[in-house]
Length: 495
Image 1 (tube, rainbow, N blue to C red):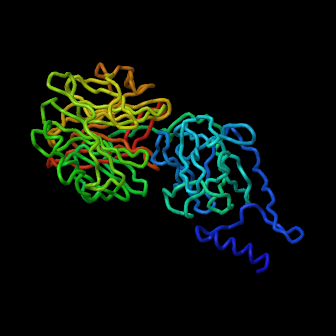
Image 2 (cartoon, helix red, strand yellow):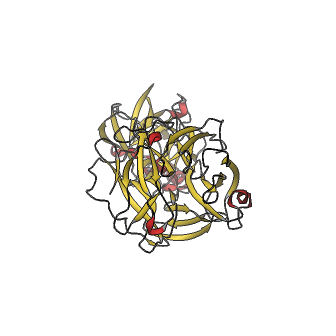
Image 3 (cartoon, one colour):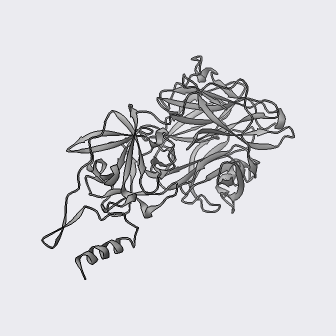
């Protein structure tokens, strides 16, 4: 075989895994021997600027999965949108290497293993060499991210062109799926979270966005799926599931526990109706917190179930998280999980009684950590359904005021406050503490939309969205969705 044939043969075998546009380092002939010449290192980057990284093969941007702020969250590719979840800044790590920090989460890229196929994730900055990358030039102004610890480069697995395609470490072959364009967006400090444009609230409350299919819900919660699309859970027999591919058409997908959940009957009086679930996705698993109770009672409990697929019947009961007894001053229903900017897990919950509470969770188990319980908000006529989100320097606490579950006569409305800390204090736009009844109204009854509430907030690729239920004129409980905007002062509104 000729020398040229040997080189071509090597490249053909490499294409057994993926098609490559180049053969690693530049090859040349010197005295009849193939010699690998060291590739040039890329030009200096601006550590005061923010960049989007666009893959040469797919045209997709490097993106933190599901707007996560947690350690070990995967980093994938997604259609470019230039939101904070796709924005990165270089931090000098010495010796020509950089840490690559997410503007959304404040965490840095990490390649925690040397084996080909190791997932690229984000982690808190530990100073480890697995978090250091050098930029190496490819043809056409593209670069490769070379890991200091392993020498592997960031690679779109199997040359995927799909949204959600995995990023992994792989041997440095200079394939187009390993080449990235650095698109400079401008200077900035990478300390924020999602940064949708600011705007002006509309003069009147908007109608819900058009939805179709199986849209009868109560207390909806929603999460984006790693393979694409959406998973919804809501109050129903053994917790009801729905799916959607486009956030418009929804289809029933069975129950979380099709065989029943006998461990809850102490709290439900034997009924199979389980309430107010909360869905999230962390470290390759769906987490579902859900409530067991009866109307008018605070003999209640919050349980946890997990699943790797989210499918009906695939869920594992992880046990009791919080319970309340009739002698307690709080009510353990309506859970919501948030992971803060330090990676700590918190569960807010509460309904009527003394209002909204918060406890810390153990990320290893998803269950309660310690005995401390924080009070966040109260409202004499009725308060429940807390949802906490983080944007920039603020934690936002959404709640529902007043009365649910009375059909078209329901008086539910969505309120919000914010705090610099997940434990509070939360105040409304006027500065009134939510523990003293404060709250800024962002949605209430209007036209044929009655009692909108029990909200969830979805951070999606095109911005934040408010999911909720409302009652039609005939009393049917339906799914409502509206976009969330933020005004110049950072306060949310629906549009």
